[in-house]
Image 1 (cartoon, rainbow, N blue to C red):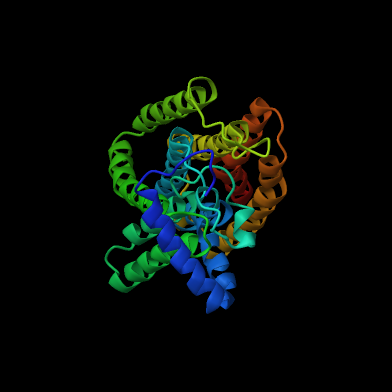
Image 2: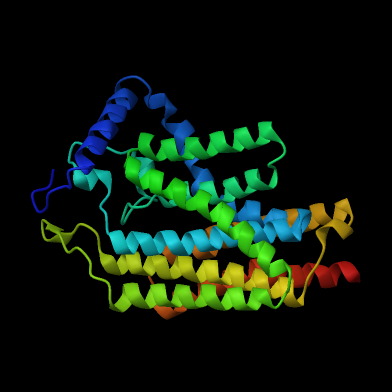
Length: 325
């Protein structure tokens, strides 16, 4: 354990549990690492976004709007919570921890709460909520959510408290978002009021973490354990993308509504395939490099916002116009 700080009393039992998992993994089941690395993808940015987008473009606008609300609000809230808590990763809390190296590349920065668990529980939980009358499907999705949470523990990149809080955050949002969307559907102008509230909260969160929050400045061998500026930058990119998604979705719902159910199956398949390929290409080829190559904070916010709004507003307007011809 690093000597520059001591762990709270509730952390050590969690580290002991992770070390137990680590011993089991290394001694008996290291072959399962690839499986859990695949499962944890369900909590990464691109796959939940793709699930939301396909639902939104091709299946049901209202359901897609609900899922995008979950994903966007979840991203803003969890990154804000990370910056407020400033909890270190397990391998910083204990030098006995040896996380799976492939997972560490996407698990830098602060640990609490688990963003992967929160994202998977909100989006997949939302999918389960929409299928609430089909028990087997719900149970299957809930099982996947729990697997994502466990994968973060197995890979050694989160503590149980990180995973539990991420899980609760995502599931609470599932029910709150449904209530809010039902309220907004009664009068389309309510989407604009709701959008104003979300934008104000996101701006407040960004201003607070940039100018008013205090951060740990622990050094080892002359280097910061976690550079707060890099974490603020990550929050800026994620918040910009989330705001782009939700602004585009709400504006589209209010001013440019479309009904996927009225389009032919062929048209929906084409728009899903074309949009899905473009979405993955943009997220992997444009947004991901912005994450890993720091540019101006303002430019990062603008670029990520434009990427988000292109998914929920620009692309629907384009395929609606094309399909009318």
